[in-house]
Every structure is written in C-alpha cells, then in structure tokens.
Length: 509
Ligand SMILES: Nc1nc2c(ncn2[C@@H]2O[C@H](COP(=O)(O)OP(=O)(O)OP(=O)(O)O)[C@@H](O)[C@H]2O)c(=O)[nH]1
Ligand SMILES: [Mg+2]
Image (cartoon, rainbow, N blue to C red; front, side):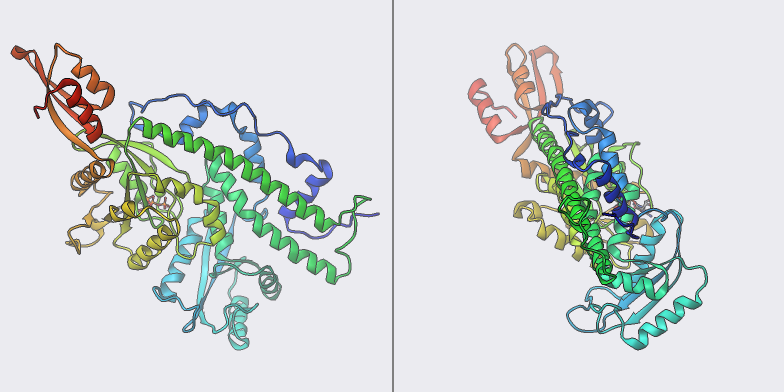
C-alpha cells in the first residue's frame, strides 16, 4: 500500500518523516533518571545569580541540550521560510456587542500589532487597514462588502508576502480560506507571538514551553489538512499494515511529543521548586518585578542591582526566561529581584498556560513590583490587563495588597507627578527615584517577612555574636574598644529575637 505524499505544512511533514524513521522514538530515554542534585551555591559576590547559571552545574543530571534543541527546532508552527516578511496588517474593528474591546481603540491595537511585527528581525509592515465588522467569528471575518474592499486593497499593494489579521486566533479553516483568497501567508496574534517567543527563547524551559504551546496549533492544522484531504478522497488510508491511518499516526506522534515535553518541563519545575526552597532557606527575600511587555522591567532591575549582564531591549518579549539578580537595600539587606516575562493583552490562553510555571514564581515572592510605562498611550489598559492576569494566577491576597506600583519612564513626561502617594515615579533609564523605591521595598519586605532591623549591643566575651551570625543576618559590627562589646546591626525575625533574648537575657537596643 502506498503512503501518498501530500502537501502538509512543513512542521507536520517532519512529524510524519520522523514516524517513518523511528516510530517508537518519542518515548526514548532522553531524560536521565539520576535524580536532582543541587549544589548549595551561595549568592555570588558578583551579585548575579541566574537559574541558567545553576543549570550548568547539573547539566548531565537533567536534559541534554541536544534533546531540547531537537524538540524546539523541529516543529515551528510557521514552518520554514519565515525569516523575511513584508506584512499587511488587518485590524477588525468591532464597534458593538460582546466582542467590542472596551478599554482600547482600533488605532491603539494597530499600533501594538505594528510593534509586534517590527519586533521580528527582517519583518516589516508595508501597510495597514482598520475595517469594521459585526461578525469577527465568521470565516472571512468581514461582511461581503468589506471583504471585497480588503481583498482589493491587498491586491493593489505591491510587495506584500503575508497578512497579519490581528485577532487572538483564526480557526484553521479561516486561515486556509483567507490564504486561498489572497494567495498569501496569513498570521493571527497567536502565531506571531509564538514566532517572537521562538526567536527570543534562550533557556531550556522557555524552549520547551514554546514547543508545548505549538502543539495545539499543529493538531488543529493537521485536522484541517485531513478534512481537506478527505474531501479529495484520500485521508483515511491505513499505513502499511499498521492498522493506523496516517491521521491517527500523526495525532499519536503529537500526543507522544506532548507527553515528552510535559515530562521534561516537570523535571525542570521540580528543580525550580528546589531552587525556591533553597532561596527561602538562605533567607534572601524575593521581589518579583512584573508588568506589561516593554515597560522597563529589565532596565529597572539593572538599575537597582547594577547587573551589567542584563540587556534591556526596545522589543516586545525581550525577556522570556526567569532570571534572578541580587541587589542591596538601604540597610544593606540582600534581596533577589526576579525578572519576568512581560504581559500582553489578548495573549492567547494556551500560550499563557504553557508559561504559567514561569509566572508561578510570582506567587512565592515576598513582594511584587508592578512596573508601568507611564508614557505609553495605552498605560491604563495595560494596567487593567496585568491586574487581570494576576487575578487569574490566584496570587495570595496579602501579596496583592502589598504590591508596589512603579511609574516608569517619567523622563518622557515633563514634570511628572504621581497621582497618589503610594505610587513611585522612577526613570529606570536615568536612574531617578531609585532610592525612594528601595526604601519602600525594604519597608515592605520587613513587613512581609516579619523581620526587624535591630541594633544590639553584644558582649564579645560570650557566644552572642556567633549565634547572631548563625541565626540572623548580621549587617554591621561596630566594636566599642574599651568595653569589650560591639554594636551589631541585624535583620532578625520576631521568633529568633525572642530566642536570642531568652538565651542571653539581654535586650539593649
Ligand atoms: N525613556 C526611557 N526608556 C526606558 C526606561 N526604562 C526602560 N526604557 C526603555 O524601554 C525599552 C524596554 O525596556 P526593557 O527593560 O527591555 O523592558 P521589559 O519590560 O523588560 O521588556 P520585555 O522583557 O520585552 O517584556 C528599552 O528600550 C529601554 O531602554 C525609562 O525609564 N525611560
Ligand atoms: Mg525584559
């Protein structure tokens, strides 16, 4: 029996080819089973401390790079040949009904769509159009008249290679119909954002999360291609005595691939969990810095920590990997800032789901900093979006209540004044407002962790000082020469201080 060659999208073709080479290859032992051994690496003197750094230490225990690379490279949803595009943007404008966007306008959405396209190297926007529709859920999105107007405009614009329809997700049928109607590649928000993620992913976890987010896209595209093939009279053939049709083989392989990625991600998450408890054990308070994409999170962390390794970029989704950076607060307390992936309105749910582990870390922080680009025309909408995502993440109430709101990029607004005292105006780029921010962060951290900064007079002839070094965080020791004592500044929890008083029966602050 023949296995006929059909024009599947390249990613799916590679799945099929792989099945022919090694039908059972997907359950192979790429995950080593020696368990996780984490070294007790202390906070580095350089102040830099990233999870990727730690990964290097137990590389072999874990996932070989080549395996992750293979999972990542093989199945891009856009297939090959997307290194350059000249894009026409189509913005459906729903003026009423439940699908109307209340917090934004079509103009602002087009601006964001342009931002997304311009983020991609060698992709350029050629032209754009806003067209009203009452039926965005229809296959062709627009009514007959507007669809004709649109098709005509696309036909007359020279040099277009792709059309970006700025909706969350096009159904595979819509995508195919539009492609056929215009003779051009058609993208939706899901595929463009995924492509940006692909280009920016660096760590294993980000790559695996992206590969996972691509699976539903591959599945539905495959289904659509099969329906198409059936209509031509050939989809349900069995492959060489296997008892499986081509479609079943492909679905099985995708399922196996999904399991393989999930299992790899589980391993990485277990490791993340261990890192988290390690950090807690070392008593470094954790501050997660979050906000809409491009609001300046990385720049702010760089300014707060002086970490030269950080590279802010004027690009959407520049940061896809969680990195942790050490900084110091006014009382010299060490703190870890977590740089997170940026938020985007209407980010497809599947994409959020696959990145949820990255955002999971937020829940376990001692403090959240919400950075806003206050110069952005959509800043109010962006805030609403971030708060909405946080709500879905079920962040503990106390953590939400203590969240610090930072208004960044004030250098772009003349004489900016914060609307309320709780808001901190800063310019991460010009390093303005950082001292005030650090002071607030310290206050809130002490509050959240139930710790106090105390100045204790200790008798140097006893074990007091070494006890404090062991049980609390000693920040400063000033020896009083003639008295055989010292003034010691410590960060100490109420419970530990209680034990200290009981042990040494002294309480001179
Ligand atoms: N004028 C001005 N530009 C800033 C400021 N802070 C950040 N930027 C610029 O904003 C752009 C984005 O900065 P990033 O720090 O990469 O933003 P991010 O929030 O980490 O972005 P993603 O990781 O992509 O979500 C860069 O071009 C920065 O130079 C600021 O205070 N003032
Ligand atoms: Mg960033």
